[in-house]
Length: 124
Image (tube, helix red, strand yellow):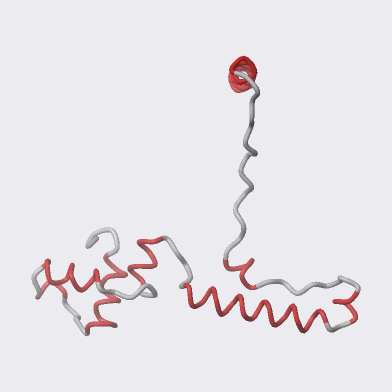
């Protein structure tokens, strides 16, 4: 963790534990302190590859719902026009939809589709 999240770890140790030179302490001690960092710390966010904490997502969700309620009371809302942009959609863009699952009635149908997919990939 020390080399991969070095900058985040230095900032978090200073902020949460007031440790400004972590090399003055045994590495085991620093590792224990890093394990105790809160979920909104820089290091934990980087380890989990999350940009936002659960609290921030919930607050954005509350704001989105309030704006939808307000919008629904307007003329635009009643005509389903000019819907407000959702903060949560900006924070966390939706992932591309996954390919639908295929169901086959028999092993022969499966093999036929498998051959077709392989041929398409090979022939481009």
